[in-house]
Image (spheres, rainbow, N blue to C red):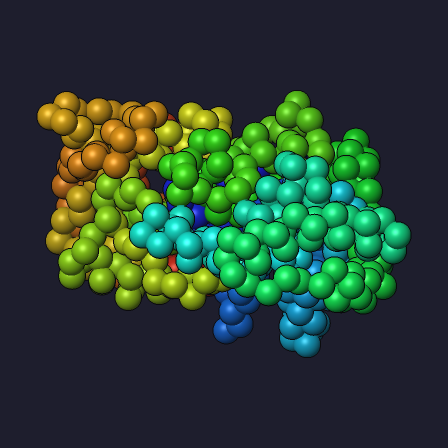
Length: 427
């Protein structure tokens, strides 16, 4: 059985956790392939809500093996705290596997992230301040610390000292901060080693053997397409590749093993942090979407910026990810509007543009071109088939499907695990 990839088709926060959980009963492995604890998934099971920041959403499904792949950056303190929190709530986390090649976030990464963002002032990116960007920068600069380094004290000391020889110069001379003692960092991180050891695995080998044995592997990205460092709204992006291409490098499997790429698409649009957002609403409608949709970041706690559905970025997500299906979430939030605007194109300097402009300047100046679809007032949370939706809700879904370029195979009509309409099976 080939692998499936689950990606956010907007700026993240689309509801990937719910989608992963929905598939949890049908897959054998769920792999987080990029990002760190700057991403969050909310999963609602019965009357219980689980907020996951670093762990794969599949950890809530008892028959799933959750995997943190080599493309993830891990804050070990956050990881162990999150595991402890789930254990206290009766969730078995013993099946978790962690790649020894995943890189670690250290205290100096977190410090640099925060002081750099403050230094940028009005030009800030809107990072979470959790050290993700600096950790990825060290990885690319080949001075990063990996999970496997925790188990070789000599290597860990050498790597931390080498990194701080450089970073302390920046902290002291550029940002007027105190130097960070290497021995304290080493001491703290050696203390994590034995707690992490039971989870350590050659995850690329494990996943290859699983696929050969006919197991179903779901590859789960954090953030969303428009936050991809290569394909997003640079520089207002994350520091990794949430797009489907990142799944191969971040999990260590080849592209020929991937059979389906599912895009998670919110029925409207949200964004956290700085950067362009053509359909953003700074009025009562935007506030209503925020309030009804509970639009507050799972990880950051920040209010999300809200706007109408943007079909231009949905088409772009279909193209750069090779999407085969969409999972449309939060359709229920739109109940009550007499008419619902949908952005079908942009106007840039008097020109109509139907595809996402590759120029950063053009995208900053893009104004939405709207079409207006009739709304509905009926409660749709009890609908379990497409036919049970109000006619106008059906028409809205079909319009979004046609504009976005891939079939909508499932629809979220509420936050709960069962509040979903499955049109076509993902497996």
